[in-house]
Amino acid sequence: MTCPQCQKSKFRVRQAKTNGNLFIACSGFPACKNTMSLPKGLSGITMTDQGCFKCKSRDRNKREVMKLKLEFDANLVNEVMSEVLPDDDNTSGTFCVNPGCEPEY
Image 1 (cartoon, helix red, strand yellow):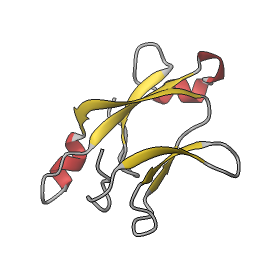
Image 2 (spheres, one colour):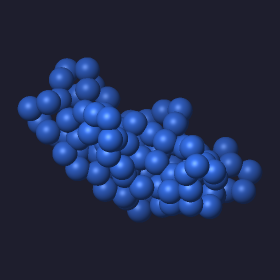
Image 3 (cartoon, rainbow, N blue to C red):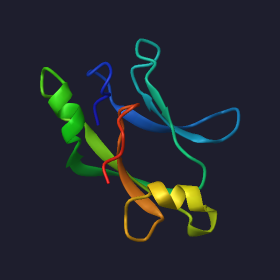
Image 4 (cartoon, rainbow, N blue to C red):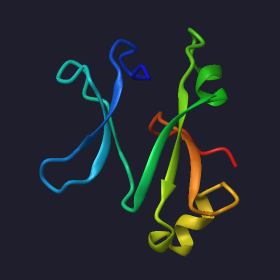
């Protein structure tokens, strides 16, 4: 997926060298420093074919921003997390990659 900030490079899942946590970063680093932290307990991440309607409607060039499906280990999902995970199983959800874009339920 193309980075929604620079619109040039691809987004990639990376692992932090300091603590091993997963995050998404623009492959155009250091020119583009766009990153997104991923929550702990993540067991799977998949790019969907769903675009974010909110982001496309706000972008003057009407660029498509794709959503990610995040899946979590059921043993690590707490009550607060399950309230914001919109899928029926309460262990997964589909979210926009743009920072600050609120999830659609």
